[in-house]
Every structure is written in C-alpha cells, then in structure tokens.
Length: 113
Length: 114
Image (cartoon, rainbow over the protein chains, first blue to last red):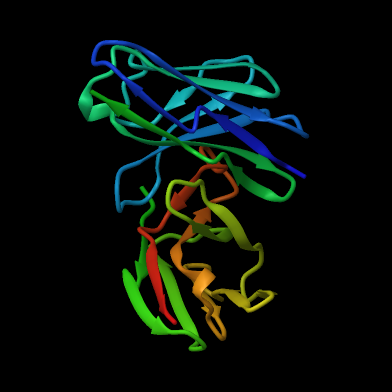
C-alpha cells in the first residue's frame, strides 16, 4: 500500500515554457505532500510543503511564483515550473506522509533546452 | 536549520562484504529513516526508526537509532550486486513547526564489485 504515482517520468521543454508535474496518492489520502529538487550527485532539497486546500509553504530561496503548487484534492498535488530556464533542469520528486512513513514518487527528470 | 552529516560519501566493496554507514546531527531527531535511491528513481524506504536506542532489521539490513537521538547507522551484511545505489539517511523532528519535514543526509554511494 501507500503508493505515490508521479508523472511524467521525464520531460524536455523549451526555455520560457511551463511544465506541470503531477503527484497522485493511489491508495490513500495525502493531506500533506512534499516537493523536492535533486541536482546530480546531490541530496534531496525540500522546495515546498503542499497542504490540501491551502497555500503551500515554500522553503527559503524557492520562488513561489516560479514553482506553483496546487493541492486541490486529497489525492493530487501538482508542481508547475513556470517560464522554465536551463537552470531549472533537475530531478523533481514528490513525497507524501503515510502511516508507513514517507513514500516517494519515482521522480521527474526535467530538461530545459 | 538542521544538518545531517552522512559518511562515507562513497564506498567500493567486494561482493559478500559487510557495509556500514552512519549519520550524525547537531540536532535531536525523533525519527530516523534510511532510504535507497537507484538512478533516475525516487528514494525507497528501507528502515524507519522511532525510538532512541531502537535496533531494527530488514533482511540483510540493520539500522539503529542512537541513544542521544543525534545519530544513526545502517549496516548491510553480505552485500550483493543489487545493493548498488545511493543510500540516504533522513531525520524528522516530529514536533513543532515544520516537524513533518525530512532533512536528508548527502548520501552514501555504494558500489559492489562482483
């Protein structure tokens, strides 16, 4: 149980466009989801905490207008990277808190060209 | 904020050898978690520790929650090629503002030589 489905697995987009990443809890309700960014050979860095029905809480240094988070239901949270630039290229991972601990999605590799 | 020091950063071992890695923190955590991440995938939970002093096993993996609540170690016995990957420790405060957030170590990259 406690599966988190994240897609797309990878996406390539042109600079200046926006990209939406979805994270779904398949067999449980996720009141809170977390969004991480991971650069090559580095650890996971928390970007924001997404709460169902309320505004997300962003970590220091993360631009909330650039990384739009929507958590409109108990099973879906989305991260939209707006006006993407090459420096936004990274591996984005979502996570949800469950009774078993924290379950992670499989990640989205974003490449901005 | 909290910081986790994870060591070693990387290790190369022969198949069949035992492996040990650890994490230390300047802050107290109420939960320690150990994850494994394969390339291009999200982290997968290996072991969760909830009490100081707790020693928990999962197959060939054993992890302990330090008595001071500022450290944890993970041991892998009789390593096999599929143990290759990056292992992360993560701590959770468990109380107060931001208590459900995880703080991650920088990871230990494990390579197993057949």
